[in-house]
Image 1 (cartoon, helix red, strand yellow):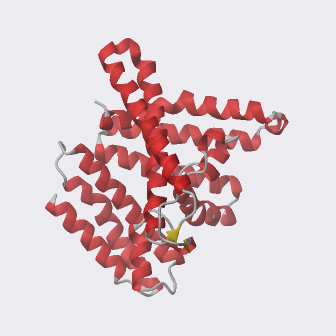
Image 2 (tube, rainbow, N blue to C red):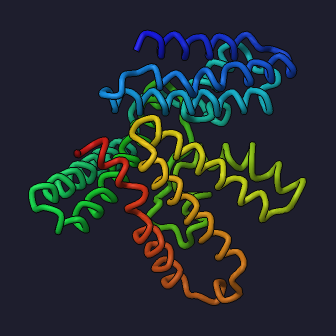
Length: 292
């Protein structure tokens, strides 16, 4: 733990002291590997700690890339915010400090949803191997509820401090395509980062489809890294396969001529179907962390 903490602090200091564009690039080259390798210093038995630290390291690396590409003119405190927060505070707006009732209600409801999902997945253990479908359905409910609770909690925290940040999730269950699910509804800070730093730059140089493929390749690598650090190669392979499947479906939506002819209801069925069919690849690593 001590070595991991020291590595993360050193990576952060390197990034903060890089002010010009060229020094920032050098800071990225030096600090990014240090941050990504820091969780490996945590003992294997502290699985959840390794997972949380690996998320922090990925957030730091994403912030480093943003700092190199879009950090001109930022103050020292602005660089800290860019490197250590999950949201882009550059688009936050001032508000009266307090807890938004709507966000508070949604966080409470989805907290209950997450508990229900955990109970379903836990019950499947008692029922034996035949209850694998219940386990995976519980995993879907657990992940969805937890994601909504955490993201609304982040908004509540910032609103209590007088800053209103954009929605981090925007009703993912209402997405009418897999493409919209990942680009506009689910985990918008990460999809925005991928669009700014991967998809659009590659699309300008090579083409739109190449940009889309590049974004999903980077997303696959990041999620597989998180699963490998926290668990093992099997978890990394499952997580990577999930995002490769999603990328393939998004490409299919963009090239299939009959896609636009589908009704909105059929598009939602299509979207939900693909997400549920591939969901075990995504939720199984989380179930190993939270339930097993």
